[in-house]
Image 1 (cartoon, rainbow, N blue to C red):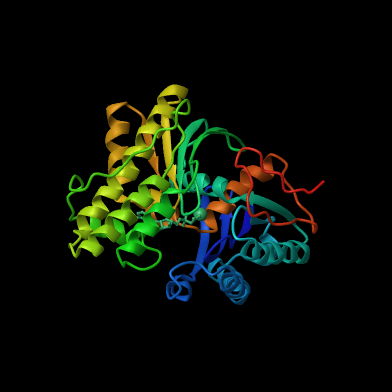
Image 2: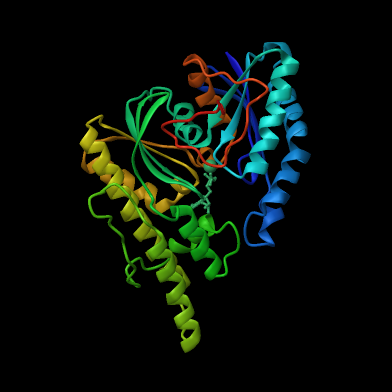
Length: 341
Ligand code: KG4
Ligand code: ZN
């Protein structure tokens, strides 16, 4: 089954063609990073406009590169939640029109479910059940993936996402936007024990997380140093933040995986590209004899192949939408409902 998938929830326009949820025929991404960098963050209106300008061209180019004929497309899939509402609507409307024109089914996909599915592409042998750590710019979750479309949230952040903490730290250190990857690079040559930073625990909810305290501590540390005229060791501060975030997410993911006893732990999302998290997960999984599935770097960030992968399983489970499909800025990963009534 060939699926044409579209992703436009934030600042990447992406179109892919995938087969049976596991094989990527083509995966096109157009990043808006340069557009938003001057503003230090994503400007929603600019993101929507840029998606409109890119999506048709990207779909044409995906089709041309894949060698797939339009009549061989069996369904059109699209990220319909969560994300920037104006940005999502561009993809949703494009997908509706494409499904109508091709005379095929339209499958709405939850963005976080897509991130999880990135691992199905990378690891053909991976099947549920498993525990998945999903860390991105807007979300930090530990998910019990009971089946391809049956999920339960085991833990989540109470405030900021891990990516928000990385991006704000990067901004205060003058690394520009989006700063997660640059912070990671800087951290590699820093001392991860130089600065003392807080870790949060939520009473009674051992798998939940909080990153706002860490973010505020970093901002205060930098501002205080500036006021005193003291120099900050940027590399070491970056390393300390990476270590704090990694310790938080890795300990909880492993705890969840051991509790559920599946023996399988996966990680996905833009922040799962972080080298501290990857190194620490690898060590912890080895120590506890868990099979670890780390989404490869190119599939960690937003892309449409992961949406096509999850769409295949949503399709098999009966998910269909029609021209009344809406986009939703927020939606729980374990109870996605794409119908207003
Ligand atoms: O999943 P994603 O591409 O978009 C969302 O759905 O949010 O994640 C983007 C986030 C940004 O916060 C970015 O700074 C962060 O992932 N990121 C990283 C790294 N690469 C990307 N954070 C830490 N270390 C990295 N190597
Ligand atoms: Zn994402």
